Length: 363
Image (cartoon, rainbow, N blue to C red; front, side):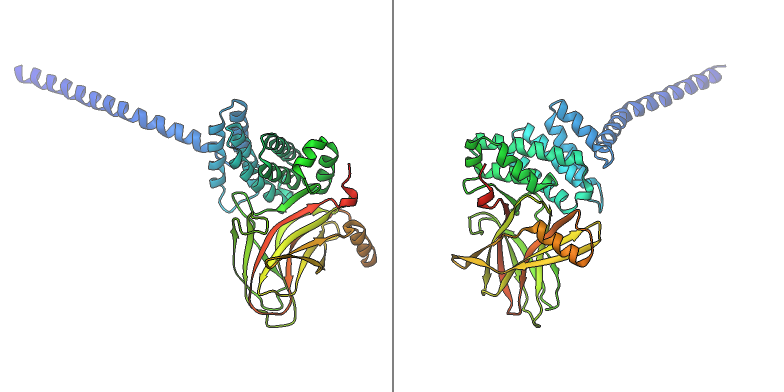
């Protein structure tokens, strides 16, 4: 009887130990499970399909650091995708502006504009309107604070991101008060098509490479431009045939009936015959065209300035009519330089600008 009682007590005691151990394990696992749930909720916000709603909610709640974190996570989530980058960079720029980190806001604004200018099919009209308004607001905010360079960068990003840079520039030139217009554009209304800023600088591509020229290396050099700003540096191999090669960056400029001109500064070592090279694309007709311009002004120190003043719209419309296609929806989609036959060279390309010709710039 005593032995049986002892066995029963041992069984009850062992079950108490088992239940106690399970309870302890559960208590130990609860924080782990909570962490996993929270981590899953955090990571799920980075989804390329849902991050926008989470970011907008965070910005609305003025939780700007959370919005920055979600955008940064989203940019790392999509493998081999870039269609949503323009939106992610724009929203992160808005979050940075909310934190008063204006330098980072302008960098992301430029990157967003570059994404949508390079691939406008990834943006909607609402996207174009949002970046135009936000970029303009940031630009005027910086201008009022005395930060001219930042203001010019933000306004340029707003223009290029708007999808209609020529119309944007004319609209702002007419709408801004004279004091703001003169402070922003002391030499006349102008935006930077490509200034080599932002988190992801542009990449140069090679076209019409019949010379067998190769782009050996390319990088952005801060402070090396003619104006003291950033510029692109290209290391290019020698040309072995009389044909030409063009080295280009993408930038979508819809052809407009409103007047506009293009400008850029260039330095080569050694000096070689150089031309500004433009590629046009007509999506409706699935046709392309090219033009080149060689006239330049010597700026000293090896630098020269090209100004391309064409009636782009009428010229392309006439060419399209002659060749029998519809020029509606035509754009300049790549801008750069072409080189004739010659030795290997190093080339520095300053910022590429669009401006309203002086005769048309008066308000």
